[in-house]
Image 1 (cartoon, rainbow, N blue to C red):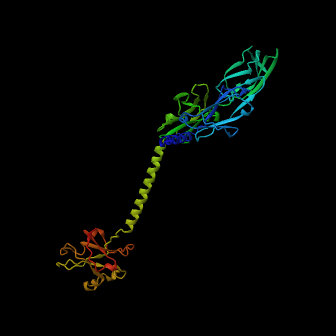
Image 2 (image 1 turned 30 degrees about the vertical axis):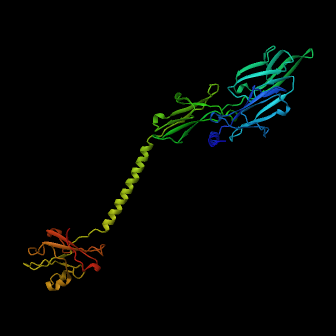
Image 3 (image 1 turned 180 degrees about the vertical axis):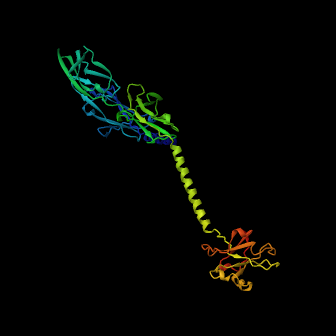
Length: 430
């Protein structure tokens, strides 16, 4: 075998497995029972993708028949040919079993091995040709339904579940120069081609703007898995999607007007079987995206507010508690720009210390950096000063002599921590 052929066979096998459709065994003629020494042809029917040339396997009563063709014929059927027949295409799934009976009776009632709703049913009251018949009668549930004379086949027509019942045929045939009545009966059970469809919607709760998918769910009988079904969809009784091979109806970005009572209909390609699902009310919830947007906006706003509060608290802890805790003492006419600020302490703030001499009082003041402006023309009541101790930001030292209305200009200076007292600090406007 060439490499190309090998690749083709592998591809077919993968497609068959992916399709997961079992083959179906059929008889020709389509009778489940034949007379001894008659012939019947069996065929392994597969889905279209697997109909290419490949190897088939046949089984009777779970035993391999060493037959590798898609069809084979049982010639001169005998008792040994009775059994359940199955087939498989390539390495695909094995089919459901179909039973073949072989009878040596004078008259047999022949019916298809399997009867499904929608099938066209025929019954045959069959006997050997060497025994001529003069009268044939058919019965259902012990009631006569038709007498055919010498004809042997009754056309029942398209069947449904109510067609099931006990069928019987009787035939008057000539044997050994005399006529005899023979009969046979079969219990016919009409099977369901596919289950009643059901509507399924995804997502379970549909909101405005969602992509809504409605599925028409049904299941074929294992004996009819090769049947291609067609699907149609309805909303409030109006068709929204005609018959096609797709069992889904999609609504992208669904809106409120897409709410309604949904149903689906399933049929065979010939329309012989049609089934409508029960209606299902689907209600879309409005404002789904708007609601989510509001939630997101509120969450973001909350985060911003928390961040702002933390920032404010951090900056508030570093705020400068300004107060004029001392007055400038400067000689009139001096061009010195050295400013003296009274250090806060309880003794210095007592009234009895207000009349200390300049030399004594200077002990209670500390030199500050030289200001960029001269103080020659300023008096002690023109400028107020305060200090900020960065090591003691939590303390505020009010001054009994501080009067904001008396200060035409207020300056402040940052007093460094003790480890930085020797570092020059530039004053700034408050």
